[in-house]
Image 1 (cartoon, one colour):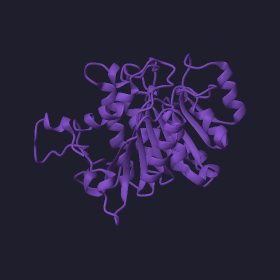
Image 2 (cartoon, helix red, strand yellow):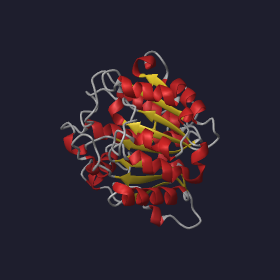
Image 3 (spheres, one colour):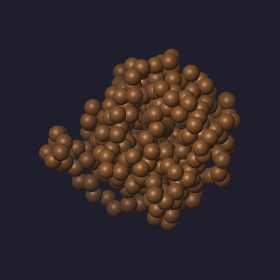
Length: 316
């Protein structure tokens, strides 16, 4: 799948560009992908005015700004001269769900995610607002819902009533997810209410407050989260709500606040999660690409999170 952004950037045969991955439909019948990308441009039930439906295409375009290569790290084992992800992973693009909002749209999302997972080791959904998490996770879990787990990186509990981008965690619990296998990382002051904090506590959700992350290694935080979320022995879904980050780095996230996660923390958490084979699906949500800063910093961070997820898979 060609990336138009790549043709407008300098060409160097020794500096490959990320993205432009082939379609899932181009995968040979005897082949299996390591990662399938799916666009889930949900936006119609957002509590904030948003152009989040433009974001999957924007992330795909931004990928061409980056190389698919990781560099040598003295703390890690691996290739001494770095690693080209496209050399070790087969990544495919399953395209976008058409009109993913509403019951019919969520059914289409579940079907596409499930179909992609039958032919790949993991699926990464590009949102769209946070309502995309419901159908993405249910499509990935399939018949394993009773054993599944959820880790969210989010400033918000997402336990609101109704159907919106503020209710995915509550909706998944009502669908049958055990709240004892939910971990929420990055919950922030002044972005929630006491009512929903009590709801999370009453349900038995494990909450890691933003301030608890200070001085802690992201790898350790994610490892603890996955032990809880994976306790049922089933697949774990990672919900990456980018508004968990500081507003200075994600101005295109309508609900982001000053004092959130640093960009490096989000990237490290995503890579740490993807290294764990229990994580079979993930989503990147809550970016309005039409409201980004002139330098496109929010969408660029999302593109880097795609690559971080792929790097985690390569380390398995």
